[in-house]
Image 1 (cartoon, rainbow, N blue to C red):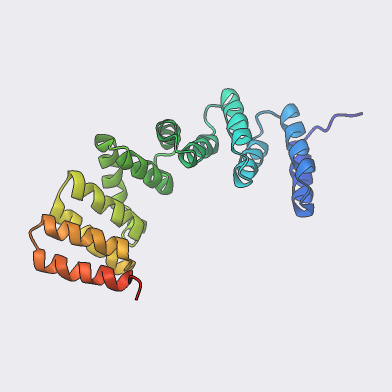
Image 2: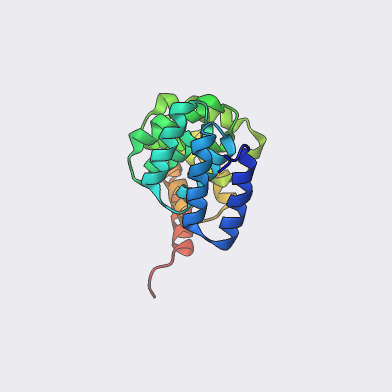
Amino acid sequence: DRQIKHPLIYIWLDLIYVQRKDEDAWLNNLLEGLRIFPDCYELNFRLITRLYENQEYEKAIHYSKQALKRNPYLTHAYITLSEIYYKKQQFEEAVVYYRKAAELEPENVELNFKFAKLLLMLRKVDEALPIYEKLSKEESFSENHEFLYWFALYHFSFGDSFRAEDLIKQATDLNPNGNYYFYYALILVKNNKYREAIQKMLEVRQQSPGPK
C-alpha cells in the first residue's frame, strides 16, 4: 500500500470519526498519523486534547510527554499535563508544567491566572505576587470576579489588607455569593471595621440560608 503523504488526510479522517463517535477509529487514526508525522502540531493537539476531554488521563500524560520529547515547545502539552496533575491533586507536579507553559506563553493571561492561583494555594508567595501584579494591569481582569477574589486573598494573607478590602468589594459587587461575603467580613475584621463585618456576616446568612 502506498503511504499517505500528508497529515491533512488524517485530520480530515479524524473529523469523520469524531462525527460518527467512533472512538477506536479516531484514536487509531491519530496514532497512525503521528507514527508517520510525529512533529505535526495539529495531530498532537487533537490526540492529547481528546484524551484529556475523555478523562483518559494516563494516556494523555503518556502522549503529552512523548510529544514533548520530540518538541519541548508544545505549550498545550505542558498545559494538559498541569491540568491533569492538578485534578489528581499532585500539585507540585502541576506547578512544574504550569511554569514551563507560562515561560513559553508569558502573555497568556488565563494560563498565568491558573498558575498564580496554584502558587498561592501552595503558599509560593514570592513567585505568585509578580504574576498577580502583572495580571492586575490587564483590562480583561478588572471585571473578573474570580481573579479579584484570589488577589484579595493574597493581600489578606500576605500583603496589604486594605487593598484586599478594595479587591474583595469589587469581586462581591460583581458576584454576590456567600463565600465572597464571608471573606469580605474577615478582611473587614482584620482592618478593625467590626460593624461593617457584622453586616457582611448577616449578608452571608442571607446568601446561604440554613434550614428553616
